[in-house]
Image 1 (cartoon, rainbow, N blue to C red):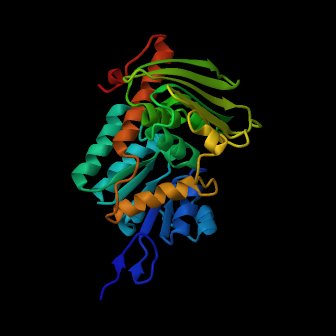
Image 2 (image 1 turned 60 degrees about the vertical axis):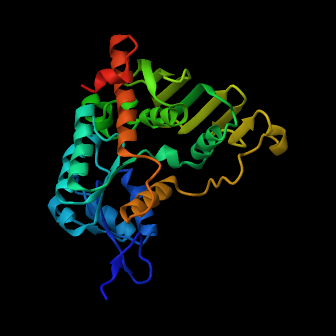
Image 3 (image 1 turned 90 degrees about the vertical axis):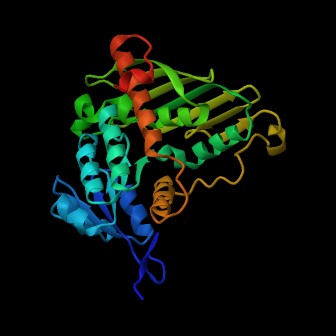
Length: 338
């Protein structure tokens, strides 16, 4: 009997092979997660670091993308953003299911063509919108869906840390800039919680060697407003995030700098002391949760909580924010889709 490929290296199953493209910082939590699931791992990177990084995760280095594509079942794109489009199209042409880090691409047309190519090839494509898998964010969204705060009214989201050290991040033509590279996480979360976005107004402050800040206000079609702040600061700035979700009947707050980190105020809060929402484990790797969900889908399991279309919608919001910052006017995400 021929062994069957499964989600991981379980008894009686042949371990699937994942090919990771890229050897930078984001590749490491992906590699760690695939290793924990028992996958055979291949890695290719044009910067020549594949062999060095492979040693840390029991992986095998490939000299070319073609070599990797010929030998893997799944392609995990952790390369710089400007390389995503070419790699995903090659993976689709090779008939490989794909995970692609956010943002999918630098513009709507490129991202849409990636989604279309995968659909036409009959392969699955899932985006690395990992914030949906952070326990506090997932728990807060579940609480909103359960009616804990009533109708969402005002959301406030913050994400700050040291500026990336790789030079390409500082070039918007390669990374998209802070709104497309970093703030897309919170654009996606805002849409996940409060629904579609009809208008974006944004500004950029600083930069040119000083800390860079992105500020944005989203108007959702349901009437909610989201205020967002993103920051790329000095090398010694501690990474931190926070959110406040205010609704007609309550408030959920979270901050990586507070203890407890996640609190609820509203009807029924006295029953739990306003403490952490129940049954939330903050020790689980969100990258592991994300990739395990994608792996299950590749093996015929349930549809993941995030789709390529979700990532495209988040990209459109980010593109609208960037356009608003350049023009000084509100922009609809629909304006950036042509």
